[in-house]
Image 1: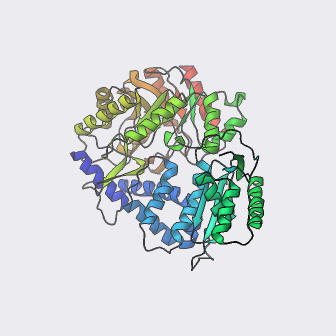
Image 2 (image 1 turned 90 degrees about the vertical axis):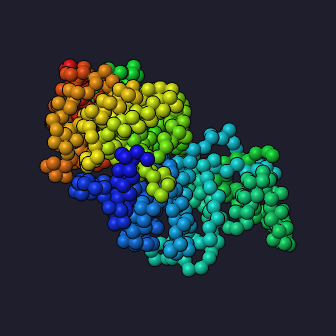
Image 3 (image 1 turned 45 degrees about the vertical axis):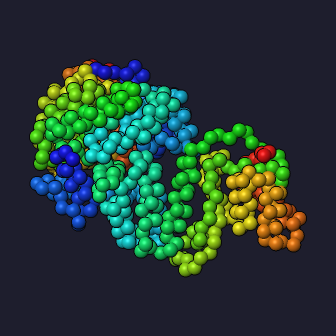
Amino acid sequence: MLDFQKYQIAFTAHIRDPKVNAKPTNANNKRIAVYREIVFNNIFGSVSACFPVCQQVLGKRAWLKLVKQFFAQHQASTPIFREIPQEFLKFLSAEKALPAYFQQLAHYEWVELAVNMQAVQTPKTSKVTDLLNEIPVLAPASMLLEYDYPVQKISARYKPKSIEKTYLFVFRNLHNKVKFIELNPITFQLLKLTTENNMPCEQALIRLAEHLQHPDIDAVIKFGLEILQDLANQEAIIGSTKK
Amino acid sequence: MALINAIQGVGLGLKRELIPQIQALYQDSSIANINFVEIAPENWIGAGGKAEQDLAWFVERYPIVCHGLCLSLGGPDPLNVNFLKQVKSFLAQHKIPLYTEHLSYCSDIQNGKAGYMYDLLPIPFTDEAVHYVAERIRQTQDILGQRIAVENASFYVAAPISTISEIEFINAVLTEADCDLHIDINNIYVNSVNFGFDPHAFLRQIPGERIVYGHMAGHYQEAPDLLVDTHGEPIIDPVWELLKSAYQLFGTFPTLLERDTNIPPLPLLLPELNKIAALQNAC
């Protein structure tokens, strides 16, 4: 390593964690303080903007401490600014001291940003022709999500204590607004089966009914069709396509 | 000067807050002095949805310059070649003729691992650093297949290991890399206060033939001897004087207003854009 690089690394180590790493020899402390402040504040702003509920749940002081720890310990690998929150998620996945639901809450908060900015191919004009016998086409910017906790209900006042499976479909509508729909477990499985396996809805519903050992397959199909229609009305399903 | 045909006159840094206002006033005579806009590729590469639509709107109507923040030309970690390739296809996709970066670094290595800091940090001014940075600029130009310009950066702490002055460093890098200069007038002034030198003497040593365009901005005065380059205040008179001198020394060059924090409504930025245009017309 070149001499000036040794200096650079001592400089950044100090900025990342001034309590642990001394400033480079002879560097002016008052001036280096500007960097301690602006570099961290920039990161703190990017992270805090994406995770308002995480911040409320932990409280201001613990949140500040957590983001400081992130900056001190995590080597972020993306040069793209909107991906800084994703780096924070990577950091959280190695953090053992936080409540069990916290990572999932953070992921849920990140999803809104991710779907809002998700780059997608414009779909060929699609319309709903036959929801039962065809494969539904989901809004192209979307995520089908499964959490262990009711992440959408968590707040400073409500912190889940036990597991409660939660299914969400998050998508960007035609007006570029991000929408969240809570799904029941069957609808979640239905969407997963049809879209991941390219399976027509009726076939997927029959398979689900068999799996649940449901006595009335027709009732399951009727129920499924209603739900699909409702998702189409909300623009979560934008069309249907033949196999 | 190393001017690019598409980039002329006066420009404005494109911030999200300003987008709907520019769109609403498009072709209105009040914003006739916005001739080009500047974006940071790190904010737009891979963005979909509303951002993608907004970008397409500007691509159709304004010449655009990419002014990068995270290439880390002076960084100790390897140049991010994947990112550079993304920049290259982004420039091609949106027909953006120019990419500029900073003479600074924004990444480091800790415990053997590279990581971004997302802010502009000062490169120590040594001969070793000159060769290192010039080589990375050459590598960048090779990968992109086009020349880049580098901006003189503002900074707050002098590296005690520096062996040459800032202007010597800039000139040595420009010569060795054979790249262009993106001259930031406010940064010259900020550094002149922070490190006690004469900004006009500094300006006279700038190789005018390498200038592609310039930046103007305001800064925050933290102490009489410490200015912070916030881009959040109106431009002060000494910086206007410096721009005038630059035009007199080198001839006019395209000049862009950066306003990145404390962003007022667009009409309040127009007087500064108009003033740049007036100075250009007076030369």
